[in-house]
Length: 305
Ligand code: G3H
Ligand code: 13P
Ligand code: ZN
Picture 1 (cartoon, rainbow, N blue to C red):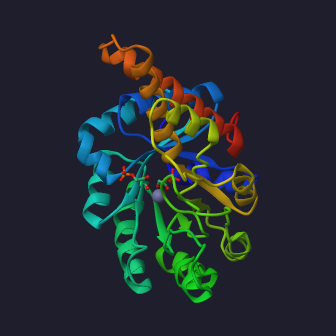
Picture 2: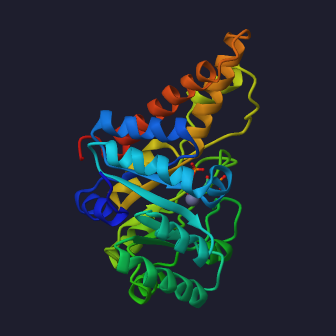
C-alpha cells in the first residue's frame, strides 16, 4: 500500500526504530526491495535519484514503483532522493511520488529555506511529504574544528530551519558520506551533535551515507575481480546508536550496489557459457534482497508493517 514518508517516520521516531530508504534503479533492485519488505513485514521507502530518472525514464521507474507499492501488503513510500531543483521535485509530485527531497544543502542558509518553502508549498496540498537537508555530507576526519562546524549540521540552525520551512523530515550531517570510501582511518560520527539536534526538534531525522560496506560483500566482489581496496563504511553499532538518538530514516545505496556487483561478477565467472540475462541478473536480485532484509532487521523495522 502506498503511503508517505511522514506516515512511516513519525511513528518510527516515536517508537525508536528507523525506516530503510533503499535506492532502486531498475526492475531487479525494485522487486528485490519490495519482496524483502513483504517477507520482513517491514515498511520501506523506495528511493529514486534524479540520475536514475535520467537513466530509466520517470514514467517507467514510477510505474514500477507504483506497481510494487500497490501490490505489497506492507506500507511503501515512493521518494525522490536528492532532488536537485524545484522543477524536478514538482515533476515527481505530479508523477505520484509520495515524498520528495529538496537538497538545498549546497546553498546558503536563507536560500535553502526559500527553496525548501517553495517545494513544501506545492507538495503539502497534494499530501506529499518533504525532506530537506541542512549541513554538508562529508567525512569528519582530517578536518579542522572550524571546518567541521561549518559543514556538520548546527543544532540551533536546524531548529530555526524546520520552524521556518514546515518541512516534514530533515537530513542532518554528522560525519557520514556517500559511497564506499567513508573513512581513511577509524569510523567516527558526531553522535553528541545528533543528541543535541534531537533534543531541539521533534521532526523525524534522516541519515544519508549510511552504508556499512560489510567485509563479506567486499570479499565476495573482490574474489571475482572487483577492485575495492580501502572501502570502509559505518559500523552497525553506530547505526543503532543513531537510531536511538532520533534517526528515523536511513539511506542505503552503496551496500545494494556492492551486492549487485558481487552477484553479477560471480554469475559471469562461474558460468562463462551463460548469456541469458535472466540467469545473470537473477542472482543480483537475490543478493540485494538479502541486504535489504538485513537492514530491516538492523533498523528495527521488521514486523512493524
Ligand atoms: O545519494 C545517492 C546516491 O548514492 C547517488 O546516486 O548515482 O543514483 O545519483 P546516483
Ligand atoms: P550510501 O552511499 O552510504 O549507501 O548512502 C546512500 C544515500 O545517502 C542516498 O541518498
Ligand atoms: Zn544521500
